Image (cartoon, rainbow, N blue to C red; front, side, top):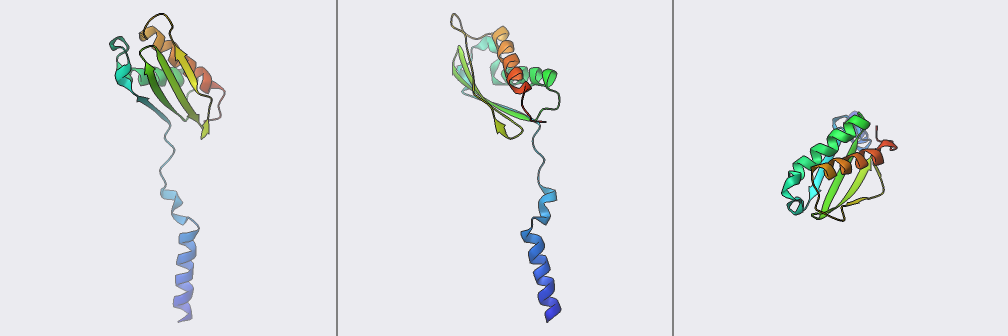
Length: 124
């Protein structure tokens, strides 16, 4: 009887200490999400093109960086990005064009500014 109780306690102790933590999913290396992509001008190529530009700029400047970017399209000429690197939130990034709508060149500049903002982070 004592052996059965001791065995049960050991199983219970192992379960409560997180012994199954080895099966946890690894941190996602990169991620980009665009909110309200429908507000983007057609010349930009949509939310997928925006994320590809960000991923390209970040990987060129910060290889191996673990980050996430949530980009909100506020208008056809204005973007807001919330960035997280290494589990730490960075200051929001605002990007606007005052005399025209966003285009592919402006998206590349925005992506470079995101990569620059992430450059000093500790997300590796």
